[in-house]
Length: 232
View 1 (cartoon, rainbow, N blue to C red):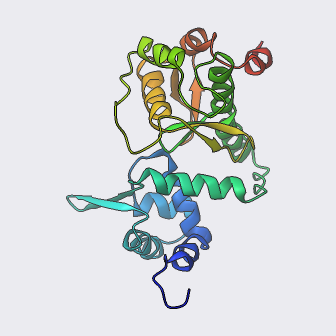
View 2 (cartoon, rainbow, N blue to C red; view 1 turned 90 degrees about the vertical axis):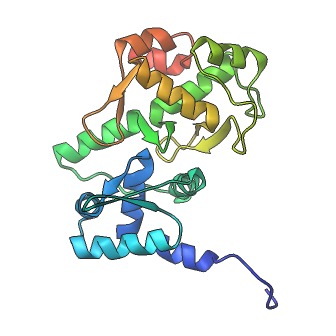
């Protein structure tokens, strides 16, 4: 760029080009902190190798770290990092098929149905919720909250901040559904509220979520008709 200052794009891209580091970042998309040992198991690498990978990710600012006693934890602290990872996953054009084992197929089904995408809801259920709030007029064609949308959010006991640097709502391309689900400040608060109300509960694999009977009743008027029809 003619000697001018420029972002370190190639450096960041090279960090994401490692299969082990990419796997670790995807594993951390639920927003929780994990140890190097846990991430080594997820990425199928040795503990020392995982520590080296994590050191590079922390140094680059993609992960934050905290220590409790002898334990070291890492997590995605910046929502922008999570958004980039999810967007790159969606732009990859194709997904590696799940292994044919029964366990791998079960994990794949649960993650495709409903999962956390950092702090908001993704998967088939996330896309259905996105369709539903737009059908109800809670979010307009520009992906902005409407008056009725603010009223619905308030009815759930959620206080929307008056000022925030992040958008209240925005589209996020879902890598399994190839359609948009909702991301932003409000969807983050919605996921927390749904969990607190018992409408969503953890699945049997990390990041997976399950819609409960209470959630089906509470979200029935909002969920897209396609999801309701499929579950009938």
